[in-house]
Length: 104
View 1: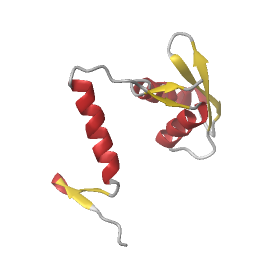
View 2: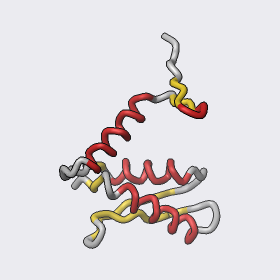
View 3: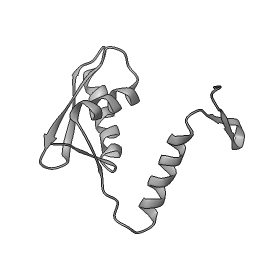
View 4: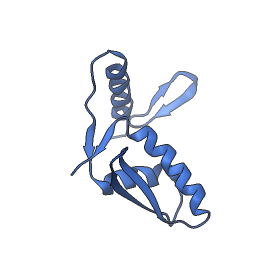
């Protein structure tokens, strides 16, 4: 079966239509006024999400429980400037915390 590619306005191609539907659903829930429950993810899953968004090879990310934020990423190893990667990981975690919480 051939993969379906959907072309959206301005020629943007989307291969994974379910990702678009999921993001639209999350947006709808956030603006509808209903409280949206956060999805539970393990530390390994959260670390994988962060490292995928950072996009660097040879990067090791750990996630630990935090009393203030719920969970916090930690750059354990990086191929370059570890402080720079830590700042970027913190920014990504701030966005992900809106949707995900650390599973116990």
